[in-house]
Amino acid sequence: MPVLNRVPTNPSKMSLQKPDLGGQTAFITGTTRGIGKQIALALAEQGCNIVSTGKTSESHDYGEDRGLEGSVEETAREVEARGAESLPIRVNLREDEQVERAVEAAIDRFGEVNIVINNASAIQLATVEDLPTNRFDLLTDVNVRGTYLTSRLFIDHLKSVDADAWILTNAPPITVDRSPGQAAYAWSKLGMSFITLSLADELESHDVGCNTFWPVTAIDTRATRYFGLGTEDDWRTPAIVSDAVLEIMRRDPTEFTGNGVYDEDLLREAGVDDFSEYNLTPGDPAPVSAQMFDPSYRRQ
Image (cartoon, rainbow, N blue to C red; front, side):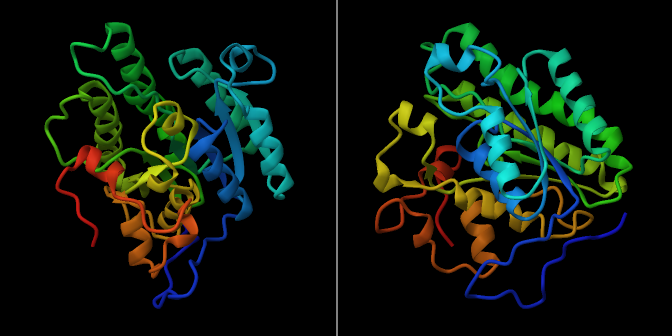
């Protein structure tokens, strides 16, 4: 498989170098807002075509009923404004046929999809006693099963692409065996990681790089604000996550695979030593997102 993007031997300390993704195509789940949308736009700025997927569509009343801003079509238009091509598709990850049709449509439109990013997630923080069974099913279906289904449907295709092939998942490193007070959510996110990292071994001989990425701090998203997870002093913009994704894609997928990375740690390794541009307010936010699943986490 040809190698398109490589890490320079001496990355600049002054600015983050980004890969040239011209002619490549990414299928991203959950692009209507937040981290998923930011990843889509960041990749588009590097020339990558985007398959924009999610439940909120201008052809459906889901968003209107729930007062949700953003849509797969809006993200697609913003991708195209950056000079890349885009295909918006309404997808409910709990519906197998919808996911299957979306994968087929993406390949039919672009011919080759070499980047699959599992970003879409459901979140609810509650004890086992307080979380209803149907909400457990939602977390499991969207997070774990959605990652499994989307990745599985692309496996044969990724084995044969000419560009660098990636399966990347927005999920944390696996460091704990329990998470009291949020067990169901933790299980679902760690399940996303378990599937992705297992695929790293299963697809190693086919040169598909499979990695997870996770923010060290809380990120300013609709979910963060809705659930009251801190204040602006505690958050960073989604751009730090998209920069981490781009940094992964500067690597060689035949070598950089099977990793669970934190955004801040990866970017620091790449030469970034000032993270203030990502902060909403002065001062670096605490590493609450990393410590959600790894209470012993400390900054490097």
